[in-house]
Image (cartoon, rainbow, N blue to C red; front, side, top):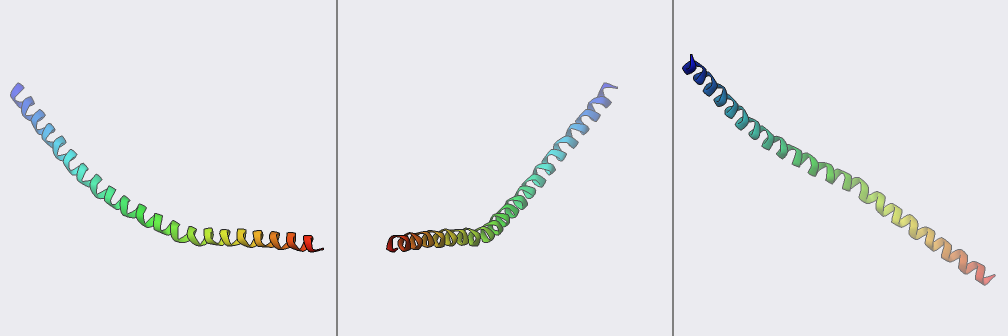
Amino acid sequence: MILVMQKILLFVLLLFMIASCSDSNEKDKQSAIDNVTEKIAREAVSSIKTPIDKANIAKELMENNTRATEKTLQQVD
């Protein structure tokens, strides 16, 4: 009876070892997919955010130039 239980226990441990090995390979593949997905997402955000940032900088420059022009006009009057 004990010999049968030992064989069953050994078989169960072997199954756990196989399952843990295949799971780690899956995690590696999943993390590689996650890495590529994150890289693509960063590039997408950058391609959207960069023009918006440039537009905001241009807006600030125009507002500063407008203020400077108005100040100059007030000094002339």
